[in-house]
Amino acid sequence: MGQMKRKAIGLLNRIQFIDLAQAVTVPPSARKDWLREYLRRAVKGGKFPSYRYFRAAIPTIYGVRRGLDPSPPVGRSDLERHIKTACKGVDEAINIDAALHLFDMVRSKGYAAYDHPAKNLPLGLKRTAAIGLECELVRDGELIFQFPSPRRTRFEDRTITILLSLIHHAYATGDREGAVIEFADLSCDFETPTSRRERLPRVRDPRIIRLERSDLLSLDDLTPEIQSVHDLLLDLGDEPEPA
Image 1 (cartoon, rainbow, N blue to C red):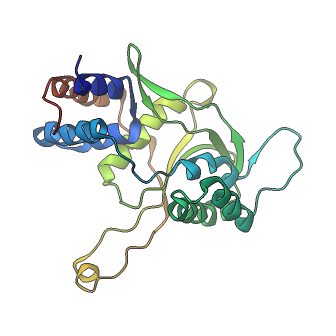
Image 2: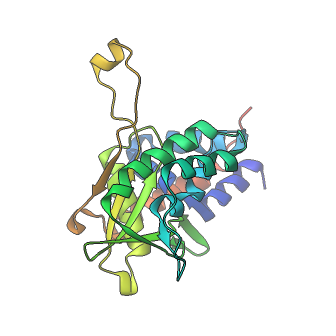
């Protein structure tokens, strides 16, 4: 089995749900080309900037409460110092920037935050969409699963709908069936002709997005699109490896 095929199967067995949502957003006529570039980037590997230190700090940012621990939630300056120490100079600026923007957006909202086991959405035999959300929020009597995205590039509305739908089907189950699903978006606003012409810097414009349950996509709606991604990636695995 060649490297392209091995990587394609590896991606299919545990695809990141954000990548899956972006692939489903791409129109069918262009999806194969998009997935080809996605697969080739994975095969070539290389080092890309990572938000792993931001993700590891998410429970701390939300101030997760644990058992009888009376310690107050970590403050802003302590959070910055904690992430700086964890990064050890690697991707430090982007992780601190995302963490502080999320902190400023969510701490003022009065959430009570608690640990929750990370869950994935089953897509088939030994296949999952990896989500990895590890805390739940309560505010004004509502149970909320809120996924924070540190990416600076703003997703299309369709992609966000797919993301929230995937989270809903993975997390709003059993005794948490009535949970609200939200997207804590830390991206920059879309550029405008004026901002491009004047070369204005792109700055983060944090927002929290919530959709009505009726706006979420059902598994019946998602399944054919997800199967399309699966079939195309398998086909692409038979292509020659990139030079």
